[in-house]
Length: 395
Image 1 (tube, rainbow, N blue to C red):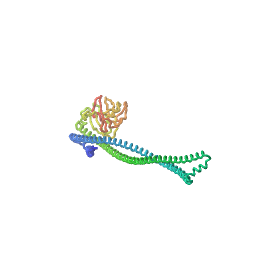
Image 2 (image 1 turned 45 degrees about the vertical axis):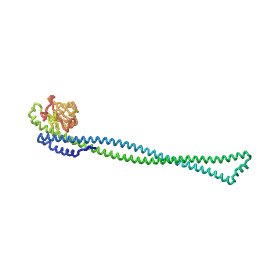
Image 3 (image 1 turned 180 degrees about the vertical axis):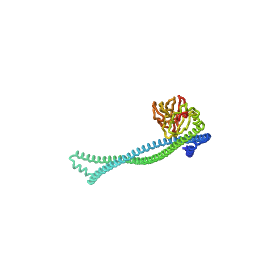
Image 4 (image 1 turned 180 degrees about the horizontal axis):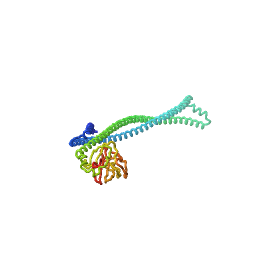
């Protein structure tokens, strides 16, 4: 972030604006007012430059914030995926441990079977040794009913012995297979445990990254909040300076126009009517009919009244009541003798088209709608469709 707001310059403008509120109204020369107008314009230019800087920095911050949010989203996804991997790893470890336990039980059973079969063979061998080695055959011989019976008995003894040996060999082979399988599963278990450690380390790393990203996000949001507040402050100061500039322009206009009394004295008030009532509750004229800001100002502006009620200047019929572009909310009333009065910039309208009104009727509330720089009433008078100076008609 390279851009920074010139806060001290803004505070200087605030102080300068406060001084102007007390000096514009008492300016004693057109040259003083022109100088003040130039200074105000320069201060507004400085504020707009600071405002532009702040808004550009906010735009940069929003981009950075979006990038940080995307990063946080990716990290959260990685956290979730790693947690899922950890959970699957723990399930695999549990299943593998169960498999090892099952294999160990099976190995124990096989070992027991081998021992039992070996005990049987040992008993037979002991009996055979005690009988002198060949006694079993003599017993078989003397116990036989015939030679064929003898052969059958010898064959049976051999088959039993061979069967016992084969069975032991098979059990031993099964035991070796199970032990090999157990060793493989134990290796697998160790690998799963190593993987679990790696996943846990990765989880801690990812969570640290997430914390850092969230801290950065909070810092960016705080900076954005401060800049937004600064922008609002600058806009407020610009509005204040704009109002001061308007006051200066109006004072300059007043110095370059004939006094209102002179205008009235030079016109034939009696022939033009002179019966319209003041359309507001108090207030003063902040701008008259005539050239203003490079264009024709077609009425008078009445500002700072005792209250904001707008009053009908004479009896008549409402011919228009609604929004009208630059005049904002406006009312038009047709009176006798071809007179028409126009009331602009109202905040609200209390009458409708076709309604009969009498002098002093509250027809609306003073406001700031349309092309307006502050709350006031714009008041126009027409005679048979021709624009008139309201000062020739209001009492």
